[in-house]
Length: 323
View (spheres, rainbow, N blue to C red):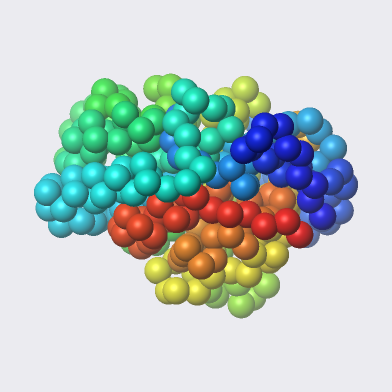
């Protein structure tokens, strides 16, 4: 159950009622030995508002991210997409810029590398930030085709995706490399969005929790509690990415809650409840409201729908309903 606390005539902050997390850790012996070693933006939603953690008085700002992947195919198309999104945001109700209120939904766009600078020029006036879809963990050198954290930082990136399932599967990005990238992004003062999640086979085997615990433990190894404040997690069940399938909102929320229990073991309850966790996997205007109504889902990592300005604008303006 949620309660609505009206703080202005137009702003409603949704506050979940206090309840303890009763999720039980289901880790194998090997996983348990790993797990304990520990260690804006623009736009809008007045109906969803800030999230509170259970019991702790911690607020989590919603964050929506649009991952354009290897799209669109030309610079002109990319700029038109950015312009179209900004124009739509201007016409929607209940919107606000970051400077007007600190309760807005944070919005981040991840264009392909060649388009980052010009897209940033278009969207920054709206308070929208840009990020890089990936970086290499070395600072410089003979690494043909790679991009360093310093490079994307210098063109205005504030976020970097780390561990996206397509990088894991198509480019064999290992947890060791992902961990190095997370720490490199933090070193350069940017914020990693660390993606985790199970494949279809792992889902069918019923080991979603074990997979997520393993990835969180490995990918955040050596990351301090202080640095964790600048990390965003994204739970993306691989079987739901680009397939049109969406993990049931309640099931996704259970996984998010479980991830917080892993983080509580690695760090403490305050860190676990403070971190923002997005859901990613074929998010649409039709599914976003139900997802964002959940207590532990703090935003969405959006793929295909972010390539349509009207769809992504609607997602950013989610209308979370009360349970």
